[in-house]
Amino acid sequence: MKHLTLLLAAAALLAGPPALGFTDPPAPPPGADTAKEAAKTNELKGDIARARQEYGSAENWYLAALRFDSRNPELYNKLGIAQLKQGRYEDARQSFSKAIRRKSDFIEALNNLGADYCLERRYKSATRYLKQALALDEQSAVTHLNLAEAWMGLNQVDRAMTEYARALEL
Image (cartoon, rainbow, N blue to C red; front, side):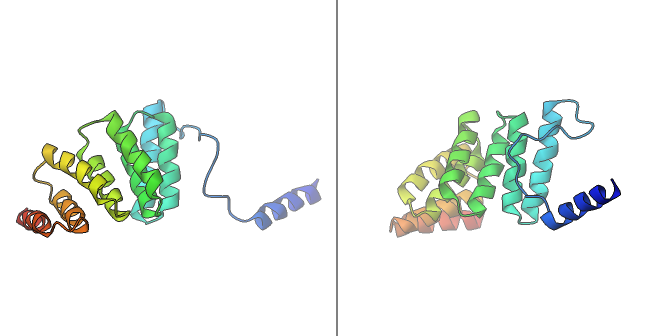
Protein backbone atom coordinates (compact mmCIF):
# COMPACT_ATOMS: atom_id res chain seq x y z
CA MET A 1 0.00 0.00 0.00
CA LYS A 2 2.89 2.34 0.80
CA HIS A 3 4.32 1.78 -2.69
CA LEU A 4 0.94 2.52 -4.28
CA THR A 5 0.71 5.82 -2.39
CA LEU A 6 4.22 6.80 -3.48
CA LEU A 7 3.44 5.80 -7.04
CA LEU A 8 0.28 7.94 -7.08
CA ALA A 9 2.15 10.89 -5.56
CA ALA A 10 4.90 10.59 -8.16
CA ALA A 11 2.36 10.38 -10.98
CA ALA A 12 0.66 13.52 -9.69
CA LEU A 13 3.97 15.41 -9.62
CA LEU A 14 4.88 14.29 -13.12
CA ALA A 15 1.51 15.36 -14.47
CA GLY A 16 2.43 18.98 -13.76
CA PRO A 17 0.09 21.78 -12.76
CA PRO A 18 -3.60 21.43 -13.50
CA ALA A 19 -4.96 23.04 -16.65
CA LEU A 20 -6.15 26.62 -16.29
CA GLY A 21 -9.55 25.98 -17.84
CA PHE A 22 -12.34 23.73 -16.76
CA THR A 23 -15.23 22.15 -18.58
CA ASP A 24 -17.74 21.50 -15.83
CA PRO A 25 -19.34 24.38 -13.96
CA PRO A 26 -17.42 24.89 -10.74
CA ALA A 27 -19.11 24.20 -7.46
CA PRO A 28 -20.03 27.26 -5.45
CA PRO A 29 -17.10 28.35 -3.30
CA PRO A 30 -17.19 27.29 0.35
CA GLY A 31 -19.57 29.52 2.26
CA ALA A 32 -21.45 30.67 -0.82
CA ASP A 33 -25.11 30.28 0.00
CA THR A 34 -26.51 31.46 -3.28
CA ALA A 35 -25.73 31.43 -6.96
CA LYS A 36 -25.31 35.22 -6.81
CA GLU A 37 -22.56 34.87 -4.21
CA ALA A 38 -20.83 32.22 -6.32
CA ALA A 39 -21.09 34.49 -9.35
CA LYS A 40 -19.62 37.42 -7.40
CA THR A 41 -16.73 35.29 -6.13
CA ASN A 42 -15.89 34.07 -9.64
CA GLU A 43 -16.28 37.60 -11.02
CA LEU A 44 -13.81 38.91 -8.45
CA LYS A 45 -11.33 36.18 -9.39
CA GLY A 46 -11.78 37.20 -13.02
CA ASP A 47 -11.17 40.84 -12.13
CA ILE A 48 -7.96 39.89 -10.34
CA ALA A 49 -6.77 37.79 -13.29
CA ARG A 50 -7.58 40.65 -15.69
CA ALA A 51 -5.67 43.12 -13.50
CA ARG A 52 -2.71 40.75 -13.76
CA GLN A 53 -3.18 40.70 -17.53
CA GLU A 54 -4.00 36.98 -17.41
CA TYR A 55 -6.81 37.34 -19.91
CA GLY A 56 -7.36 33.64 -20.61
CA SER A 57 -7.76 32.95 -16.91
CA ALA A 58 -10.02 35.98 -16.53
CA GLU A 59 -12.19 34.69 -19.36
CA ASN A 60 -12.54 31.33 -17.60
CA TRP A 61 -13.56 32.97 -14.33
CA TYR A 62 -16.13 35.20 -16.06
CA LEU A 63 -17.57 32.17 -17.85
CA ALA A 64 -17.78 30.43 -14.47
CA ALA A 65 -19.57 33.44 -13.01
CA LEU A 66 -22.02 33.44 -15.92
CA ARG A 67 -22.96 29.85 -15.11
CA PHE A 68 -24.38 31.18 -11.85
CA ASP A 69 -25.72 34.53 -13.13
CA SER A 70 -26.37 34.33 -16.88
CA ARG A 71 -28.44 37.52 -16.99
CA ASN A 72 -25.71 39.84 -15.70
CA PRO A 73 -24.73 42.35 -18.42
CA GLU A 74 -21.61 43.48 -16.54
CA LEU A 75 -20.24 39.93 -16.66
CA TYR A 76 -20.72 39.77 -20.42
CA ASN A 77 -18.96 43.13 -20.79
CA LYS A 78 -16.01 41.95 -18.71
CA LEU A 79 -15.89 38.69 -20.66
CA GLY A 80 -15.80 40.71 -23.87
CA ILE A 81 -12.89 42.80 -22.61
CA ALA A 82 -10.92 39.64 -21.75
CA GLN A 83 -11.64 38.22 -25.20
CA LEU A 84 -10.75 41.51 -26.89
CA LYS A 85 -7.41 41.60 -25.05
CA GLN A 86 -6.70 38.14 -26.49
CA GLY A 87 -7.39 39.41 -30.01
CA ARG A 88 -10.63 37.44 -30.33
CA TYR A 89 -12.72 40.21 -31.82
CA GLU A 90 -15.71 38.15 -32.97
CA ASP A 91 -16.08 36.49 -29.55
CA ALA A 92 -15.75 39.89 -27.89
CA ARG A 93 -18.43 41.37 -30.15
CA GLN A 94 -20.79 38.56 -29.24
CA SER A 95 -20.18 39.15 -25.54
CA PHE A 96 -20.66 42.93 -25.82
CA SER A 97 -23.84 42.35 -27.83
CA LYS A 98 -25.18 40.02 -25.13
CA ALA A 99 -24.47 42.69 -22.54
CA ILE A 100 -26.38 45.25 -24.60
CA ARG A 101 -29.31 42.88 -25.13
CA ARG A 102 -29.58 42.53 -21.37
CA LYS A 103 -29.18 46.26 -20.72
CA SER A 104 -29.86 48.44 -23.77
CA ASP A 105 -28.47 51.61 -22.16
CA PHE A 106 -25.17 50.01 -21.13
CA ILE A 107 -22.81 52.79 -22.19
CA GLU A 108 -19.57 50.91 -21.51
CA ALA A 109 -20.66 47.89 -23.57
CA LEU A 110 -21.77 50.15 -26.44
CA ASN A 111 -18.40 51.91 -26.34
CA ASN A 112 -16.53 48.61 -26.17
CA LEU A 113 -18.49 47.20 -29.10
CA GLY A 114 -17.65 50.33 -31.10
CA ALA A 115 -13.99 50.06 -30.13
CA ASP A 116 -13.98 46.40 -31.19
CA TYR A 117 -15.27 47.39 -34.63
CA CYS A 118 -12.59 50.11 -34.83
CA LEU A 119 -9.87 47.59 -34.10
CA GLU A 120 -11.11 45.52 -37.02
CA ARG A 121 -11.32 48.62 -39.21
CA ARG A 122 -15.07 48.32 -39.53
CA TYR A 123 -15.49 52.01 -38.93
CA LYS A 124 -19.04 52.49 -40.16
CA SER A 125 -20.29 49.83 -37.74
CA ALA A 126 -18.18 51.42 -35.01
CA THR A 127 -19.81 54.83 -35.47
CA ARG A 128 -23.26 53.32 -35.00
CA TYR A 129 -22.52 52.04 -31.50
CA LEU A 130 -20.32 54.93 -30.44
CA LYS A 131 -23.05 57.43 -31.38
CA GLN A 132 -25.53 55.40 -29.30
CA ALA A 133 -23.16 55.54 -26.33
CA LEU A 134 -22.73 59.31 -26.70
CA ALA A 135 -26.48 59.80 -26.93
CA LEU A 136 -26.65 58.27 -23.46
CA ASP A 137 -23.60 60.06 -22.04
CA GLU A 138 -22.23 63.06 -23.91
CA GLN A 139 -19.52 63.46 -21.23
CA SER A 140 -17.60 60.24 -22.06
CA ALA A 141 -14.14 61.32 -23.20
CA VAL A 142 -13.12 57.79 -24.14
CA THR A 143 -16.18 57.38 -26.36
CA HIS A 144 -15.43 60.70 -28.09
CA LEU A 145 -11.87 59.49 -28.65
CA ASN A 146 -13.08 56.18 -30.11
CA LEU A 147 -15.55 57.98 -32.36
CA ALA A 148 -12.73 60.26 -33.54
CA GLU A 149 -10.72 57.17 -34.49
CA ALA A 150 -13.70 55.79 -36.41
CA TRP A 151 -14.16 59.08 -38.28
CA MET A 152 -10.44 59.11 -39.15
CA GLY A 153 -10.79 55.59 -40.47
CA LEU A 154 -13.59 56.82 -42.70
CA ASN A 155 -11.40 59.78 -43.84
CA GLN A 156 -13.79 62.28 -42.29
CA VAL A 157 -11.08 64.44 -40.79
CA ASP A 158 -13.27 67.39 -39.78
CA ARG A 159 -15.59 65.17 -37.78
CA ALA A 160 -12.61 63.38 -36.25
CA MET A 161 -11.00 66.66 -35.17
CA THR A 162 -14.28 67.77 -33.57
CA GLU A 163 -14.40 64.54 -31.55
CA TYR A 164 -10.72 64.78 -30.57
CA ALA A 165 -11.28 68.33 -29.36
CA ARG A 166 -14.34 67.29 -27.37
CA ALA A 167 -12.38 64.41 -25.77
CA LEU A 168 -9.66 66.84 -24.72
CA GLU A 169 -12.23 69.24 -23.22
CA LEU A 170 -13.56 66.51 -21.01
